[in-house]
Image (cartoon, rainbow, N blue to C red; front, side, top):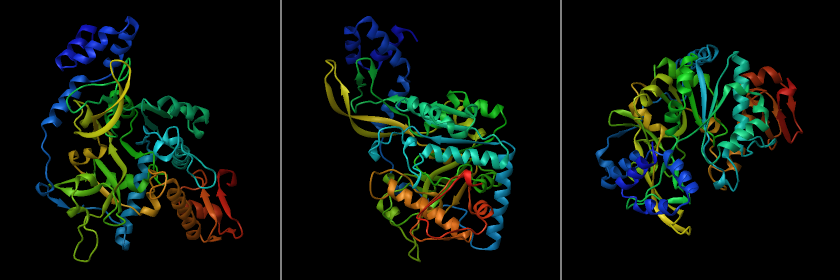
Length: 464
């Protein structure tokens, strides 16, 4: 796109203030602003602005909510047999090198009081391993267990890409083959004021925001990674977000259920703690499986209970999914089909004189769970919160580093007890994924050991 075409776009969409700003810039700064503008899909931005400017909200009463059709925690031998069959099927998928892993890691740790990419936040209870290290070690351990190459894809953002890539290099990729680790950036869209103005972040840069975790699917296609994975014979993509240290990376049972049901999209859910828990709900909506944000559901639904007094809409979204690569291709191959959402926030920007000002803007983003209603077949699997869901979102209180570390200790304590190992009830425990990925593997390696008197128990690969 040439200079005059970009300027025509700005004129077409009424951005006279940017044209005036462009006119007073030096030749060097003009080129910088033009290069910045080229990065963005400005027609899409204003198509979305027009859509949300005219939009009227859909009321909850117009939506037909039902509880999900989920595969729940096994209650009898028949249900357990299905889980066992799924594990075998999932292990086969990994062995045949059909499974890749995607970690969405575009965020910073600012809400935790931490400067840096959230994936570099130290979280394990004894060794202080980072979120990235815990996930990478799981990929290493699974690759060894199944004799397979499991590609690890990490979606970064403009804000943290350089630091994230450098972090992996500095730590020798935590034992992974660097050739199997692929970093890619999520897309960005300009932010727009409610009256339709683009704003400047600096003299040469537009104010913009990431396009949401749904943008991970679009970026996979746009970067060519999706095509490369398919060419290499991979079929399924295990998806998770970086803030949950209890994620079972490439869980064979989950992969197996996904495959056995012929699903395009599968999701893990946990039972909500109570009716006040703020979590997205996995529901059956207007004849399709869907995830709905708690902020988009009225109290009538969030607090609904059944005849036994149990929460009616019980399935909380964990942001752990499996997507078939063919399905992602359908969503992205002929234009990105996930719907965009609009959120309002107050931001700082730079005016024509370079002064810092504050303004309300609309940001447009996509959610990966909006792929679920577009799937031909779906699978919803209930898992235990204490085993798989301890997100790190807040500095203190619920969903904080403190609660996540305690959840890790509790989980590993339960593994040791199931393996018949005596431990002090107050001992801190950490089990490296390189030592054991589950209770069965732990039982084989510890063989009824005792840790009475030990206050810190760390089991790692050096003890094999």
